[in-house]
Length: 233
Image 1 (cartoon, helix red, strand yellow):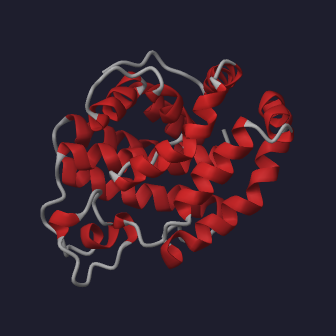
Image 2 (image 1 turned 135 degrees about the horizontal axis):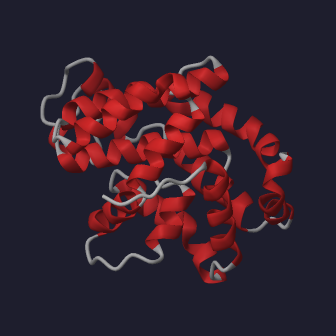
């Protein structure tokens, strides 16, 4: 797995550079891509969306996995940089996934996604099927964009172009899907029908078939989705 180490600042520069050369027709496709990915159990942050533009695999799952693998080390370093108090837990997720302990990785991902959200808002990420999260992110977007360190992104936001649409059409729209598989009520839900492991089914021991490599990748993607939304990149 690749990754030479990338600070949050360098990641911001990379994303901003991609945004400047991003084809206008691809901007219109962002929501469709995010919706299609969501229906297949993937939560895409902007780095993944940009990365998929350059992917060459025929299978969509393989494309997303390739994007994750390309920045594998970077993602764990950035998570630890963002919340050093959780660095050992993030490292455990990485080690579990690499060792094939997918069930453990998935459980930790769900708890740490909730944890980093709670660190910022003192509220549960999963409350009311993401309705609380959507509300909090919506309130925070202007604060994210107005930071001095995000000058390039603020320009895009004022132009009502790529990054405003990214938040409104990708992050907030995805968080509006409160009946998705990840937060679906486990009552009368067949585990085999789920596109992504169900948090309630996993955490409370209702489900037993979720511990797969693909499922682990999808839940890691969800953790990174929440991380990027919190950072406002």
